[in-house]
Length: 237
Ligand code: IYR
Image 1 (cartoon, rainbow, N blue to C red):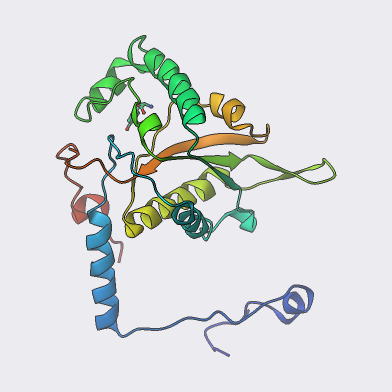
Image 2 (spheres, rainbow, N blue to C red):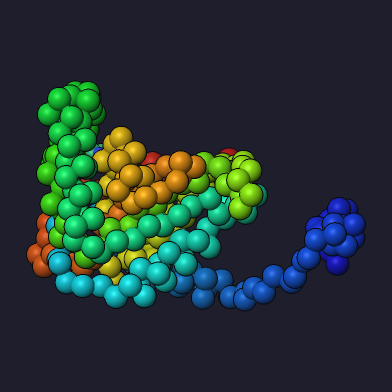
């Protein structure tokens, strides 16, 4: 097939034991690639985390499609070790807000976040008030599956769980932004209370909470600058 490879993948033995299919891939010209790359960058560079959402409703289908996109993420041993739990129930959202604010009061007011941490957050101006949890039409909590529980009750290990779930979270955020919704990566730590409120099993641990909706009209965000390429990119040629 290709003389660059002495050991083609899959090997004939592998292909005889596990199914393989041809990867369908469309190759573009370099000009088209550059256009697509720049267009996607411009779009993603418009994304901002917001802290005030409109209460306008959002169809469940949109949330489900973003979850499907997130779940295309690569994962360790293709275990897809994630569960997305979505709610728009006002009572559940209220319960989550109350519990989140209780933890955040300790973080901010009782110095569970140390001085250095609080100073780092000063330009963002975050505090223990989390009204957006109740106002945003949807709350999606992304849980990492630390291990798998099989139907017979035995357990199986998952691999690179944080890397996998972090990658899925990134795709989820991109999918929401692309469809015109906004979100915030919120971590009301410690987040164990979310297992209880959302009735999740012991093998799952909350990874991040996403309030999702339209931005409140005129919402303000900190005037943050993103690092320029030379600060984040280098080459070894
Ligand atoms: N969990 C808190 C604190 C917080 C921490 C970081 I790092 C942030 O970038 C923002 C907030 C909260 O959500 O307010």
